[in-house]
Length: 184
Image (tube, rainbow, N blue to C red; front, side, top):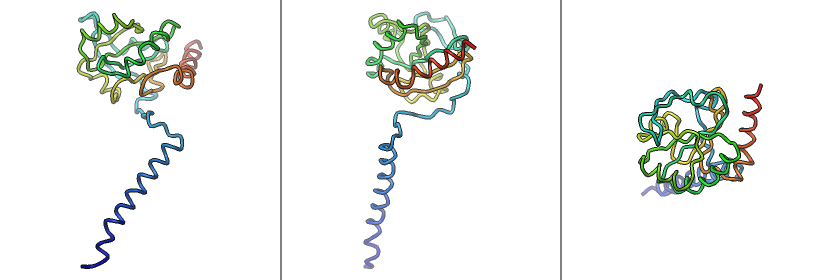
């Protein structure tokens, strides 16, 4: 048997280890693994027609995102992280932050019960039972939050829960900037 053949698995293993080391080094160098780029940044919210969560038959479209800056929060009752962020969303709404909820791939009755029990931070609650708007937005799961300016343009996508730290460090400055731009 040729001794060179015995080194092929070793060489393949070393190449694989090198690739993993480079990727690990990127994440430790400050890349945020929860930050998912979106092709929709700088573009209008996709067209849609969805029912209100609590009022079936009452329809909304993308025009609800025009007029003032706001957050679009994608959530579901099956999502434990959504539960963890919900109290903070109630605080933000109590402090005047405008939030629209997108109930994503969920059961309507469970979602309504959730909001009745935990409080409702949303100006409008959209029901996306089949997940089509979520798909158009590029949602990977819940929770995800989009910052949308007064013209209905998506300015930022946040994957994961909204909490005091990421609100004060990243989301609030962007939201404040959008509020200032809307005044001009």
